[in-house]
Each structure stands twice: as structure tokens, then as C-alpha cells.
Amino acid sequence: MRLQIATRIALYAILDLASGPGPQLSSGEIAARFGISVNHLSKVLAVLVRAGLVESLRGAGGGYRFRGNARRVTLLEVIRLFEDVDPGTRTDGDAASSSPEGRALRRVLDEIDDIARATLGSITLATLLKLVEEQAGAAPTREPRRRGMPGRA
Amino acid sequence: MPIPNAPLSPRAPGDVRVRAARPSDLPAAVALDAEDTGEAKPAYWKARYQWYAGRHPDRFFLVAERRGKVLGFIVGEVRAWEFGSPPAGWVFAIHVKRDGRQHGLGTVLFDAICERFRRAGAQHVRTMVAKDAPLILSFFRSLGMMAGPFMQLERRLAP
Image (tube, rainbow over all chains, first blue to last red; front, side, top):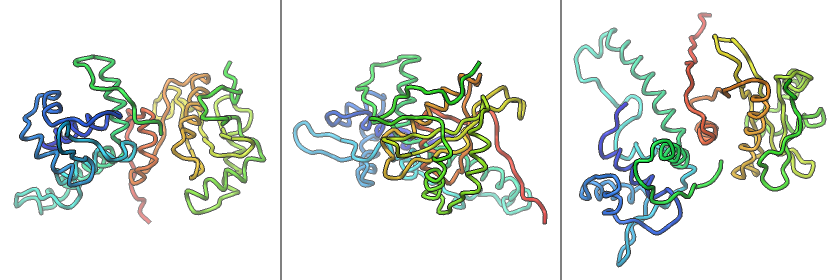
């Protein structure tokens, strides 16, 4: 499964913002951490703000702040803001897709999508942040911004 | 020699204690299950208790209690060589009182049974969760559980 670039940027940004208590972050700070375009990030952040997952703070020292529950918000909730991953909404776009062969193939592909949705719907931001910690401990590539864990289940 | 159901010092929140279940815990276990499933199944849990809480070195029925009140329970066993798998701990059921959730009770129960699985020779812990039960899936995920090397397959049996 591959996620679109906007979706991946959204996940990086929201993980950064949810990674612990602390001051808000500017889009420039987040963009610099992940080596992404500020323009692209700003559009993604606007979607997260509209969804109520991120708060935009104006004025001097303003920026963005996570405002959800990291132990409840799942990856699937964030992904759904940017791409369609729900069953029955995708067409294969070829005439043969309605043939018995096409429908049989779709059944197998739907099974894969179903597993992917269940996986993404079960991993919260807090859980992914634990995996981030593990990865950072196993192969430190950059200094984490902050290390506070959102809490235990 | 593994010592099943021996007292542990789990990372319990507050004065919560994890111990082996007793017959007198059954009504609380039935009530906790009914709280989640909407159906009280006393005969079923009595049979499960007899199977899991006896003097078997690889079966565990543990409860978390505070001041004598049962707040949750976990059930599991070490099973070996099914599906070609070396000994692994299987968590078969876990329930935590609704108003006691979000306080680490489930984690304490899980840690306690994992410690017993380790003592019984298991190197992995497994469970099976419905795909449409995101809360319990998220709970196990938060404990570091990932997809394992097996896939569950099934088909409908023709009538």
C-alpha cells in the first residue's frame, strides 16, 4: 500500500505536533525537520485544522498545535482526510473489471484493502509515536524534537 | 520449572494487585464479560475457569483487584506446535471494568500474563481480535503487538 505525498506529509506533521506537550510549531519548523515544502505543508495543515485535529495559533510566536487525543486518533482517520480508502468507492477503470475474472480479482484486492484498513484503524498516533521511539533508538538519524509519550493504554 | 500463578510485583497503578483467579471471582468475571458483550454466560465462564485456572503450568486465569474488588481479568495459555509454531502464549480473553479503563489496568494484566508465559517457556505472545473491534485492536497495538507470521483464513460451510 502506498500513501499519497499529501497524506504522508499530514502524518509526519501530526506526529510531530502530537509527540508531546510543548509549544506550538511553525510550518517552517515542521517542514525543515522532514525536508518538505512549506507551501505543500501549509495546504496539508489547513486540512488538519479544518478537521479539528490541529489548532492554528496566530500572532507572534504563533504556529500549530495538536488538539486531539493521541491515544484515540488513528492513522486511518488522518488518511481519510486526504484519500479515499473506503470499500466500494474505487473502480478499476477497465471494461474487463466487470467480467467474472475482474470481479474475482477485485475480491482478492478488496481483502487486502480490508486488512490495510483494519491495521490503519487500529494504530493510534500514540502507538505510532512508540514505534518512532523504537526506530530512533535503533538507528538515530536525527535528534527528536521532544520525547514525551502521550501515556499508557 | 515454571511457577504458574505465583505472586508477581506487576507495575500496578495504585494499589492494584494481580493474582490467580479464585472460584469466588467468577461472578465478577461473568459481570465484566457481560458489560462488554451484553450477555451473561455463567456456565461458559465456569467451564473456562475450570480449564484455565487449575493446576496446569501453562494455563492462566488472572484477575486485577483493588481492595478486594475485581476490576479486570485476563485468560490465556501457552500452546505449542499448533500450526507448526514453537511454544507461544495466547491471550484468549481480557476484560477491564469500563469505569476503570484508561488507568493502565489492561496493561498490568497483559504484563502479568506475559511474565507467566515467559516463565512457561514462551517467546511470543499472540491473540486474535475482530477487525471491526478498533478499541481492543488499538489496545493490543499500543502494547507493541504487530501482525504475526500467521494469517487467519476461513470459509463458510455449505449447509
